[in-house]
Image 1 (cartoon, rainbow, N blue to C red):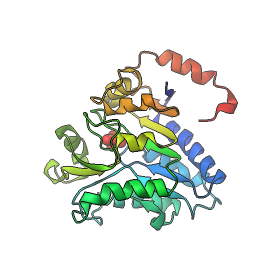
Image 2: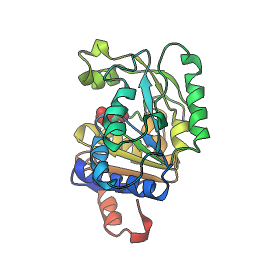
Image 3: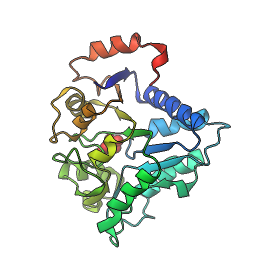
Image 4: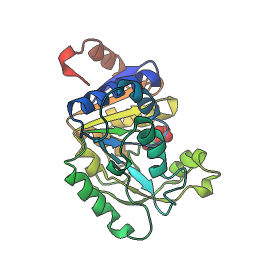
Length: 259
Ligand code: PGA
């Protein structure tokens, strides 16, 4: 089962995960990171610069989970722009080594296969950061996504369009299609770190961690992975049946285990 760490707030979660990412970069300067967009990973990205002071990050590689289809890559809300602004620039990474799926309409038929090949050629993702949607999606794998799915075009649910409308002028401006790593792609990363904060995520988190493994709640795919860490605040943990046990196991965690 996933390790569940319940922390007081998002900042504490950011620090924990940033510690692990900094450790990975120090151990392997060419490490391949799996990056996520949305509000959830921000505390991780904000905590990283001070932990990477003096560390050579020039060869760190990264793959984002997803991108909108048909969006101008220069649009401030394209995930390419978001990753650049929130991760590449503040950390001083080489932009040529940090990729997002290509959402341009031209070549979209093979953009998924190209992305899969690029991830494989890089040796796979060492640590994949994940948020979770209120409908249980990870990446943009909406309910019903196959556990074997690879990077491909998906249609966003109305719920996701509404959830993401805050980044655009209106819900009509949110692109309806996306290109996202599949659940099969995500499951090939060597360590999954899923973060969630706030009451609005409580049901999705409970379903992902403790519910039945079902394509109806794509986040439940994490139960099929051998190394998963779920880091949540008390509000996002509020529907977890075994929250007391998670506190107890974390309080008694052997020091040698790491994240
Ligand atoms: P959020 O999105 O981090 O902005 O809440 C999470 C997700 O949709 O995966």
